[in-house]
Structure formats: C-alpha cells, structure tokens
Image (cartoon, rainbow, N blue to C red; front, top):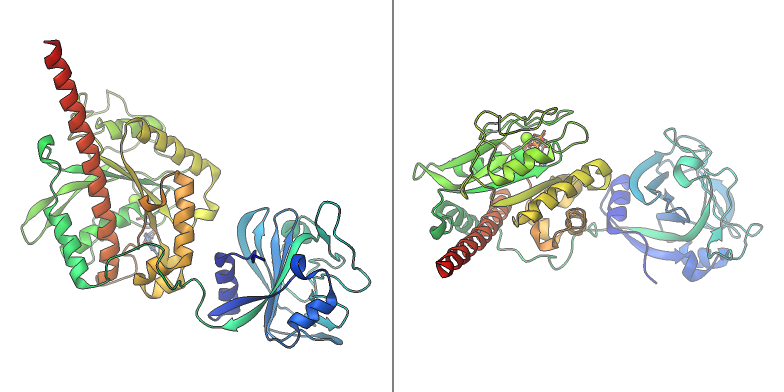
Length: 469
Ligand SMILES: Nc1nc2c(ncn2[C@@H]2O[C@H](COP(=O)(O)OP(=O)(O)OP(=O)(O)O)[C@@H](O)[C@H]2O)c(=O)[nH]1
Ligand SMILES: [Mg+2]
C-alpha cells in the first residue's frame, strides 16, 4: 500500500532531524489496523521513528523520537524529540515544535505511538472506523503544549481541533543519502563539463534571428513575481560573457519591485566586441497592488513601449507616453516570454499573484508568442543542488517543483527550466553557466519559432494580395 508522505515532506523531516536520512514505512493504520499489538510487532526496538497523522481536514502533523518504541509501560524523556506540522488544510506549511521539558513519549504494550501533546490510541480508546471511513483517535491533551514548544500554535491551528484521521504512518529513520537523489535523471541533460559549456556559449554567441525577417535581434521578455530573480538572470548571462561576476541590473530584495523600468539589455561578446543578437527585457515584478499593469504589458508585447520606460503604478501607458512607438514593426515586438518563478516560494504564491500571472499568460497566448518558465533559487529548496548544481536533474525535489510550476502557469513540463542564478558566488562556475545558457538557448529557439510563424503569415498575406491583384 502506497506511502502518503511525499518526498518533499521526507526532505523537510530529514532537515529537522539534522542529518541525511531515509524513511522506511513500518506501520500504517489503514493497512495494519488500529491494533497496538501490530504497532508493537512492527515498530518496537527498531530505532528512531517519525509518526505522521493525516487528519480528515487535510492537516498533516506528527512527532519524532530518537529512541525505539517499546512496551515497558512508562514515560520517557527524549531531548531530541519534536512534534511538527507539515500541511495545514492541504497547504504546505511546515513548522517544527521542539522539545522543552519533562517526558516526551509513552511506551506501553497496549498503547499506539503516544506523545505528550499528541496521543493516538490505546486499549481503552480503540474504536472501529467511522461510517465515513476515518479513525477517531484519542484527543485529550491534544496539542496542549506539554513537553514541546508549540510556538503559539494550538490544536485548532494545527489540526482544526480534532484528531480524526484517514491514516497514521510510522516510519523508521535510517542514516543514508536523502532520497531526493534519484538513480536516473528525470530529464536528460548534456555532460556537465567545459566542452558542453563552450558549445552552448558558441550557440548563443553565433545565434542570428531568422534571416528572412531581417531584424537585428530577438526580444526575450522576463516577467514574474517580485524578487523571483529576473534581473539576476540577466546578470548571470552577462557575467558568463564578461568572464566574471557582473551586476548590470540592480538586484536584491525590497517590499515592492526593485526594477522600476522596462530595460531592453544588450550583451556584448568581448571576444568580437559585437553585440549578441538578442535583448533580455527586464520588467517590474508582478505583485498584488502595485504590479505591472495588464495594459502596459500588452503594449510591451506589441512593441509600443520604449526602452527605459518607467512604470507608473497608478497610471497606465498611453499613446501620449513619451517615446511611445505608435507603429511598431516585428523588430519592436516581444518574440518569446519567459515567466520567472521563485522555486522556493511556489507553495506560498498568493492567489492574487497567480491570477495576475494567468491574466498575463492569456495576453501572451492571444498574440501567439511562445512561452517558457525559468524556475530560480533551486539551491534554496534542495540541499543536494546547493552543494552541487549538476545534481539538478537527479533531484526529486527539483522535479516536483518543476511539475508544480508547470501546473501554475499551465505550460508543458518540458518548457519549465530550472536555473540557479549567480548571487553569493564570487567566481563563475561551469555548472551554473551550463544551466543558464541551456535556458537561454531554449528561449532563442522559441523566439525563432515565433519568427518562423510570422514569416509564414507574411508570405500567406502577400500571396493572398497577389491572387486578388
Ligand atoms: N539563492 C538564490 N538566490 C537568488 C537566485 N536568483 C536570485 N536570487 C536572489 O533573489 C533576490 C531577488 O533577485 P532579483 O534578481 O532582484 O529579482 P527580480 O525578479 O529582478 O525582482 P524585482 O525587480 O524586485 O521584481 C536577490 O537577492 C538575488 O540575489 C537564485 O537562483 N538562488
Ligand atoms: Mg528586477
């Protein structure tokens, strides 16, 4: 029977325990029954365990003990024990409640896994499954704060005030590689070596927009939530070509978007001193309230907004805006849109921001512009990637985040590219370069697809005109 705990949950628990751990399912209420005998048969003397409760309101919470369960009939005190919550009404909201004082858990032959503040079942409380298919677990002293620091939370905030569960699982905690590292990659990638880097760099350096369209460069628009790493991506690409860490666009964290204007950056290849044949267009971030306006965005996509235009949070751009391009041609337009998403905040992305991103997406779709998503800050969600960026495509945490981002923007998973921008580094790193250039190469290829469509359209239109003549 399938385990309910996700890889992300396991990773979080492993981080709280403080060492790389694998979790192996020992006891499962829905499989083994509400039986203290089965619980002790399967869990006694096995080693440290984590117990997870899944309540009927989609709250997931539990407890960890560093010693084995047993049947000796007394309370134990474990300073390494902790309680926690993982999901609140279906949303991932992990909080750990550390040990404070006194005893932490009770080991008796006719009790299930039993913590101070978090009981389960014992011989006097065992009931059958309810008619609705859930299990009524004991709930006196439930999250009353005894033994653990609940950080202001209560039974109400953690579990909606009740301990009726659809399941309960006990996992053995074993030392070992965190199981976010997969044996085979979830996406094929090139070798992580300097040859791959050079090939990608050459592709980008030699890129030319579709010849027939006769435009100097393609425009790649970066759009996304405030602080997602749009400006940092531009800096990352610029650093790669400059050969050292650079900071053309201002980056950092601020309550509202740090980038206030529309900037169409060009990048120069120092070896040829020539400008590369694309522009990376940086914009103000999407946020609730002072966000970039849909009308402004429509003008950007169509090529009406001039370079260096400063977004006005209260007034949208209009034909009276200085420099407004009244009759934009294909060279002024946006040729590919990249949604830049912060991979470390996908779970807490506000509904307001998600709905703004969806509005933007429909503007892009209406115009037939290809779309991609760059998922940044992968180093923040996966320790393995933080230590070694080349583990990006064997990290299950990254794969989960990519799938989630694809769902949010509603684009194919293969169009979501995980990246790691330069931020704390003082020197260039081949693996980071490979990721960023892979993302850029994909954007250029998509831009060419758009140009190809435009060219075909132009051809068809001129044929129609010729036939009429
Ligand atoms: N760890 C980590 N931090 C990143 C990454 N990308 C960006 N950051 C950091 O995130 C913060 C925001 O980055 P920016 O590039 O300014 O974000 P932005 O999307 O341009 O934000 P606004 O202009 O304010 O809308 C900065 O402190 C960056 O250093 C990344 O891949 N990993
Ligand atoms: Mg910015």
